[in-house]
Length: 293
Image (tube, rainbow, N blue to C red; front, side, top):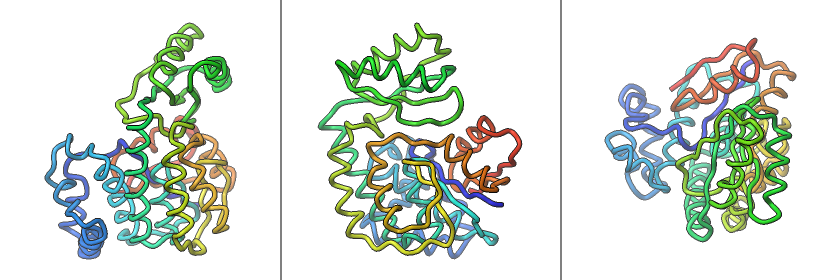
């Protein structure tokens, strides 16, 4: 069975989507529609902008979303048995499985990006990747530090690879303690704030209304969502999980395991980069992976 997967923020690169635009008339039409929806030419930045320009909040998330979604929707053999997306990628997955229209998905992604930026400015915070420790140890350390500072697991990416999220002081304290507990490395991430933590509550509240006001359709296949890693095709559940996603951890490893248990043996990453293919190989060496870009 085929599982289509969609990357999150951080997968962007200068020139992304340019070949797709040049070589595929249908893709060109989608990109043109995107410029109209956004009210500015995001294609100029994606195709010819610098790495720095791509890091602008209103550019990054829509750019990754567009590259991913247009890659999937213009593929000749796009027939997913199931889909999943990592963080931002969940919105791409919901357009790919027809739960959201292209335009509505793009509007929500822009709203999400701007709301997250605002939350980051209100609550300066950060994230770090923890390598080489069991989940339970990372969780225990975060629990201890939470008595004085905010820090929590944000992304369960693969066995021995967790991203933590919190205040600058919380991350600093956790980093020291995790190294003492035997972490191979704790790597600070160049991000704007503590995504998938309670510090995103202002963005959660802002995005909730937008999601409630958007029409969701019955999808063509199940989505495995970040919040609970479970398959669902229920529209109300999809909306609830999407709202909870901003302040809850991304249960990626668990999602992949559940997809494999439900029959997925071939994972296809749509859009920029190969990050998810690498994670899947760490989660299950038996399944095959490929990328569409």
